[in-house]
Length: 483
Image (cartoon, one colour):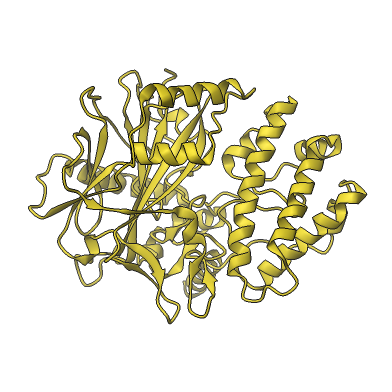
């Protein structure tokens, strides 16, 4: 028994310290397919990433692989590779993954303690040269189809083997169902008397016809039917559709704030600056590509309810994702905590029907929200202490809400430290280790690394039974019948 306990503890330690694979010396062989005129740039970008790894500041929000040093990938973009047959689709896809890589290089360069020998502008010129070269390079596309990048699962099979997963999931299923019933009951429980409404007001509302024209034009210009909007349009849509947050407020733990670093290098949430972080992504839904707007708030703590509350600890927060339909209208809203827990899915269109539950995978909480033609604001109600979502409804915009400062989620990837230094909120596993929870010691048999720990976008496992990632390219489709 002692030996078994030692093995389990050793494996648990390994599961929490796995880092990105180091760049192999043989990478030069993988870059030989680039034209000789572009190989220098390929080696330059690989050398930059090698330095980034050596200094421990690699950003892992998106996947980077040495074979394609000028690009970065999410699960959505990788799902499109088999469909890149036309020149127009290749160009659109390359623009997208090149932009992901550019943002990644920017934060990594800023986070480097020693930048000697690297020029960010020179790196960007090299990346642009490789992207331009790749567009018409048949060898590049042949290599991409033959050796497509792969994003590893956020589940670890060895944990499930050691943790006797078939037995563990059978024992856990009743407890998971009971917890879901408790959360659902919150939707009919009365609100705490102390509540505060927060929102980020739009500079000017958009007209539905203008929104529809953006989506129609973008989709018509894409052979993939991909409404790849520009940054200005996405920002305007985020302003237009930003939800209100009605938060029960019993303590400072319930005030959404701005994430920052103390002078000593410890992260914290500055509650004096109510803040909303925004980002966006794309998903595939029954043959369509849809835009998703993401809104996240951070709290300083999840309040403890007892001396040994396994779910309490530093940092907490909610990530709300609004999926728009092909005409740019609210379609589906889903949410998780920043640990990936408590996945909820709300159908906002009456034509959407939830599919029969797949018993092999843990189902999220699902509900319908009836539309209203007279109001345009979604209000998310959040409970005190544990910050559970306990309400979603259409409302008239509040007259005097507390204002949320809006920041790009990308800023969390490079926060200022003392002496002109910068550091990501997340480590090289995409995790915020300052937020670890006691629950990780008994939930590890389900294969999730450090359950309860806050995570970076791209690293949210959302089910203990079965496997599901919040950013899976086709995550929503199995939950609904085809409209």
